Image (tube, rainbow, N blue to C red):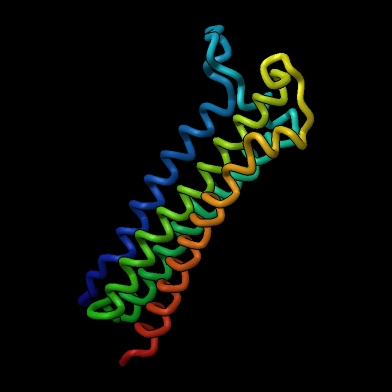
Length: 179
């Protein structure tokens, strides 16, 4: 039996592996490996998450990164394998460009949005825990001082990821319907 060698499933698998590596690093940082060393500049991400408020962005970004950045990209590889490997409809021409757009835009958009959310939430939680450098501030002030700066970049990256997903979906439909 001859098999068709498609490229896109492997590319998305490796993207999921890379996103998984980033998620492992984020997980390691969240579970406080550095808190045992009493490093002055380090503030525990688990305390940020437990503090609620703006720090919730860290948790939401992390969970979304695991679900969309790792699991969804790995599942996407299965879809490409199904179209290319099972049905033998290898991507070429327009559909190949759509797959490239899907691959690049979705990975950049997911990583950019979720990592920005995580960082913004970490800073917001730190500000809440430290009372804004001793001057004291409310959750509203923290949202204005910190998180408001992340809304547009996070939204922009999400739009980029959605465009990538739409390109991929269009490529799936075109390649699936081709004879």
